[in-house]
Length: 286
Length: 303
Image (cartoon, rainbow over all chains, first blue to last red; front, side):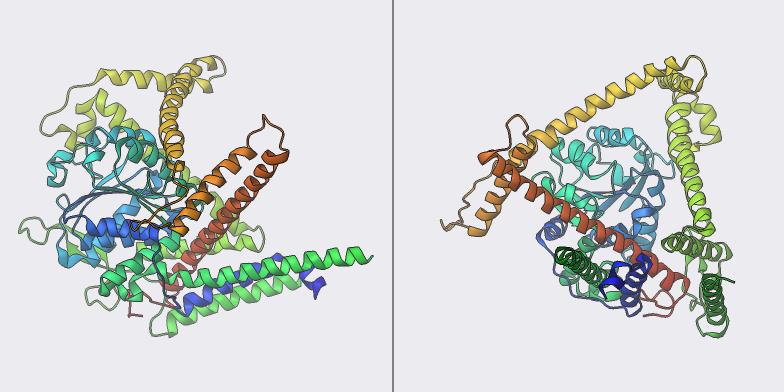
């Protein structure tokens, strides 16, 4: 048995991982989630803002992180729609340009079609600017300098939503959904820290450990990857029963494959240690 | 024929047969995208423009979208091609990798370089009327802006930067490079100093004994704060090399190593979670959008 484990082809492990992830997806399994403080802080803040508050949603990620971050974007935009907040979409990633558009279509235009949100009045897509952290720095004093037009290159001054907007300080919340540079760190350095604007972050799992030191003084809260999305969906479902429908909760559904895959990894770590100690034991006997 | 070749041939044939049978024999089929036409501005009597919106196949107005269906199958092929690397490097993986690199590079050049920098930030400033009539019609409303000749400075710096490619005169490129390095060093220094140095020190100055409003000791919060402050000091001790790591400093540095190890462990666990989430995302795409084995969001026939 030990010999078998010692010489196990790594492709069997890949196959086991594929099954551990695939079967719960096929079985549509899900587990209950309980929101933690870092997520609840964001949820309660958005929930507590008066209707029509300005929220800047920066989609600072590309398609390569979509599997982790799209459920965060959907859950937060859904919450903003429920509270009828004014939403300003933007991205600092060139390959992130289509992503706000997709969320707008799927959530604002389809799921919340009955709310009759109007482009330019209730939400706007500012598009992409390639100046990286300089975008944030200049937006700190003048948003229209960085985004004089929306994504369709129509002047921002022509939209009612932009009438009372000058700088980032006019935003009640900045929510960045981020995967790396430019992203969470730059929003902290040039947005929340110098300006004192409330900042919430939805980050990839890889980046999440870097975000914790900024809590809670420089960052309102953190949605750490798919787990953060699932917790936010749970908080939304607790408050709004219509969102208890599992079909609407991508994050919660993706936690079942996480559970089985983590069990598999823990099992493999234990087995690896068994082989290691067995080898040491045999070496000592020789 | 080698045993491995036989196994792969059988797997490919079985997979192909599954797709054909499921696509032709099952009630639902698989791998198709449907759209329907909707008015862009339904309230307007004169604006008759239409756009295509994703629609479930059960919608009476739905029609098969060939471009979106082809896109779906291409996405499925590339997903499988990339995942095939887990077995072994192969031609399908190489194709997917090359296409990915090529498409990404072109997208960055066109989106970030041309349409977001050269056109709106450079040429639109230097020749607003020409660019407005050609590419940015809204630029001319309500009246064409005056040319901003200050934009000649970045134009000249950009051309100087390209001189690095010349066989002689590459030194010219050092001047704009020095400008870039200087500007970013200044910007970064301010950002790090405020957000990562001063603010982090301020966040670490916290009470070790936390009292509740009722005047009692909040044990949990006190332990958390003590652990945080002690961890900061221990990690700093580990990176403090002016004193030999012996005695009290050595023991403190040892504790710092443990803190660091726990942090690395948490980072690794987060990384695992992230990778599994991405895998789950692709598997969901294959099962839901492509093979139509599941329909959790009720996009087609309900869950």
